[in-house]
Image (cartoon, rainbow, N blue to C red; front, top):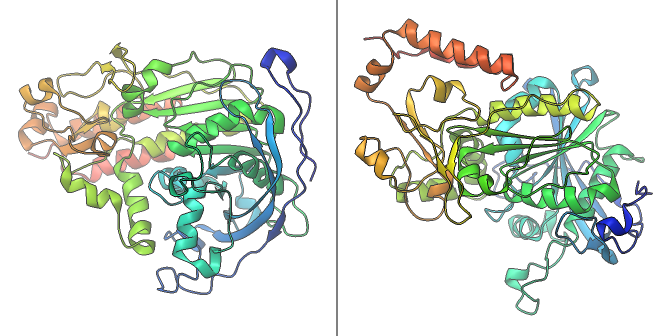
Length: 484
């Protein structure tokens, strides 16, 4: 496989040398998965989707890839020089695609898995699986970090035991702390994209020919992907656009492909406010009021998989330790992500840039680990940013970020999740009381009208797709809110 390297930017970017060319990786598959997901043998795809893929016209397949990769000296906002070449690796990709080519919308989303919870978590898929299948995207998950591979090998040594993408630094005291255990992850991600774009005798997409390849990641995965976008993408030129969900990493301003950041309220308050960048013709940042780093939709999508395949859910175990057990907000993060993907697809094809969205109203920017201060209304809900119906016509206190707040306590609002570890990232969602709802809405029709107005406004501005706005309105219509 010949990588599309192109001309680099030379001394102005501090680049020392052109990256070496890696040999084309071997691909095998689809790998048989004979057992029913949940079987004790674990002879199936780890985190095999529990959604009715066939009913949506989709199929899921796993492929193993084996090759050699470059490692890079990453960091900063310049092209990264190669440190070493011919480093052997063996890993997998998982593909979910429309069976009927007529259902394919022409865009492939390639996700950098998140390993924060010590396994491969396809968090972008978990946020947006409904629209990915509704709109006809191809989704591909790449396993390219040591922690995720270690979890796969432990889960089923017979299926994944030969996998290797490097040494896990945390478990190997012989390695220096400043060694990047995932140094091969960047070139593995490049080669996965090349395999999809230029398949050989084994085609993971079964003849589908994407017009655009969109790289996506969430949180830790998005942070690694941001490094890739800054340091490797200008040399590899594999991906046509990037969606970074919950990443505060600065992005270089001379990229030739668009980068779209989507930030939850938590992300902005805890770190993103200090690293904001202006929107440009190749960069957008949307910020969602009332959205936590892990919301209830992500939890509902992921916890079922954790319980089935690992027997334990970290979120479920942590929730009772938070001051508010209803962790995770119910703002429409996934629906905003769906709109962002629709815009990014067109943008990457050469269409117009997405609409510019207002930023969250930050009244004081603080450097992490101190939280920045965000303006809040009488319900203690965040002001500014994208105001989805859950915040514009609230029936719950959706707090995107946890932490003690005297103002909330004084107002009789106890919706902030305080406690150890992830409680702050989860935020919370606490239902309003009957009296509080009655104070907001004169009748059920009044509530529905306000939801309908917010939904229509978000569609008009491009922050929600009409299909998701219609769901929000129908949900309001079927509720009892305002029925006195």
